[in-house]
View 1: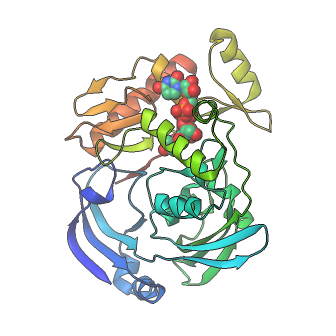
View 2: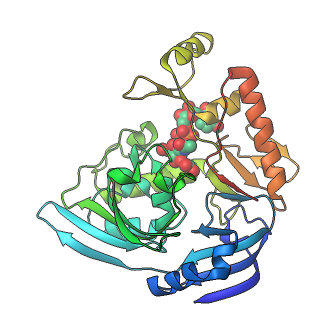
Length: 336
Ligand code: EPU
């Protein structure tokens, strides 16, 4: 167990904001986690469980306990002629897991290549990209209830997955701490390459998980900044989902608006397009930038503070609401 006081979080948030937490606690196994959860001081304190902080915006120092898992490990727990079931520790770096499964020739994760973050957080957020969401391959989640200390295997259905949403984000429910997830992967993969840029990238190539991974990494590197070089948290807002009538009215005014129809009749529209139309793309506001290749990404140009990023996000929200009547919801979680 590692316990630090007044701990710098710069390396624990991909915006690289220079904030501190009152305490930082890292547990190496489930026993250590239970010791923390049962501790009276811990129970009285404000606490936040993080992965690698790739979806967090710290507005200020965190006056509580930041919890972090160091539980790793990737293990085959079941196999059939068609499928392999893998249990993965919450602290495994997500893209290492993808790289490992692709190298084994297993299918299912290739479209989720290159997403920053750790495995436990991936299951909280239901990460998604290029036509795949984690829920499509997730069998179950092992988690501890933070209040009752009970350990449970939560099935995919019980996780209540939606677009970047899950049971684990519902603040009305008891907080859960994910220790491992189990994935169901294909031994004879049929890859999904329905995303336009991906299809183009794969033209003339054999469609294998390995080729798809390479193509996804190429497409991502064209559009998304590497957080190791330029602080960011990926898409800052969720893509809004509109009722069919509202979308039709918008389409009449803006015939060129890109759209993704959903099975229930509603239509998802890219927030990046809305933001670009409002003139923000590539613009700098002090130390905060709107990425010039993808307007949905806010970047720390070097010395930004969390509140400055939040202010730029707010002016984007206001502009999009005024012009399109659409309220953007942040995908990143504000802390503090
Ligand atoms: N677009 C613009 N201008 C921009 C950005 C986008 O016009 O500056 C339009 C383009 O027409 C483009 C469309 O928006 O075709 C969609 O853009 P993109 O393919 O880059 O995807 P996105 O909808 O902006 C979502 C996810 C990404 C994921 C990609 C690929 C959300 C909030 N974001 O972005 O996820 O990588 O699709 O599947 O759903 C993340 O969650 O952090 C993330 C990066």
